[in-house]
Image 1 (cartoon, rainbow, N blue to C red):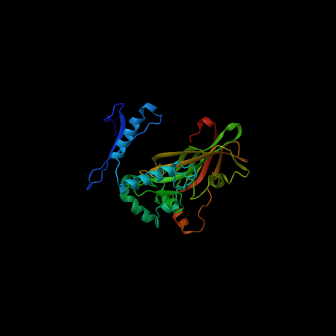
Image 2 (cartoon, helix red, strand yellow):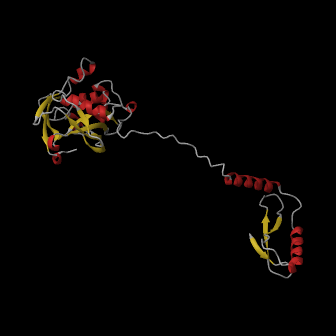
Image 3 (cartoon, rainbow, N blue to C red):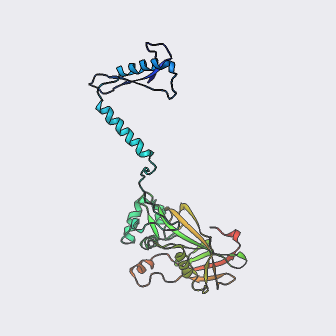
Length: 313
C-alpha cells in the first residue's frame, strides 16, 4: 500500500510504494518505487529531487523476479487485448428453436398400448376402482375402447403417474352466422342410446402434427359435412389459446389437461335455424373398426344458433 515516508532531507513527504514478494520459500524482498508527480519541480528544489532519486536507486533490486515478470507480462497482454477495438469478447451462440404457438405434443413421447385390454390392465391400479368401473356404464361417459382409439390415433397422451394425466389438444371453431349469432352444439345422441349435453361450439381433437387450419377444415367436414356445402373462411386474427385442467367428464376419475385452440370462422350454406347432422364412418375397414364397434360413439349432433353472450368457450 502507498504510505508517506519522510526522508532524511527537509521538504514535503515523498510517496513511496512498498511491495513484498508473496512467494513462499524465498527471502522476502522489499522493493520501492516512487510515484513521480506530473508537475515540474521548482529549480530551487532540484538538489532535493537528486537526493530522492539517489534514495530510490539504493532500494531498487539488482535482480528481476521471474514469476513477477511473467505475471506482469500476462497482465499487460490481457488488458491490451481487450482494450483493442478490433477484438471483441466471444460469446458462444446458443441455438434457438422456434416452437409454434399452436402445435400438438411430440408423438414419439406418447405411451402406446397393444390393445384395449393392455390399457385396462395398466389403468386399474392407477385409478379409483369405482370411477374406472363407471366408464361406459354411467350415462354420457365413454369406455376404455374409446380411450385406446384416442391414443392409437395420437389424439390423446397419458402421463405415467398415479392417477395418469390425459393431455388432449382440441380445436374449437366458433362459427359466426347472420346478426353475429354463433353456432353451438346443444347435445349429442350416442351409440348406446343416451344423450349427452354439450352447449358449446364445434370442437374436435387435433391429430399429431396437424396445423390449426387443417384441424378446422377437418372438424367442419366431419361434423357439418352433411349440411355445409359452401366456402369456409377463417376470420384473421381470431386465434386464441388457453390451457384448462379438470377431471374428464368422459372418463370419470381421470384428470385431464386440455390445450384449447379457438378460432372464428364463417361457413356458407348453413341453415338459419336449428339442424341435425350425423357422424360419418371414421375408421373404415381396419382393425381399429373392430374396437370402434365396442366403443361409445356419437351418432347425431344437434345444432342451434345463439347470441354471442350465451357461448361458453
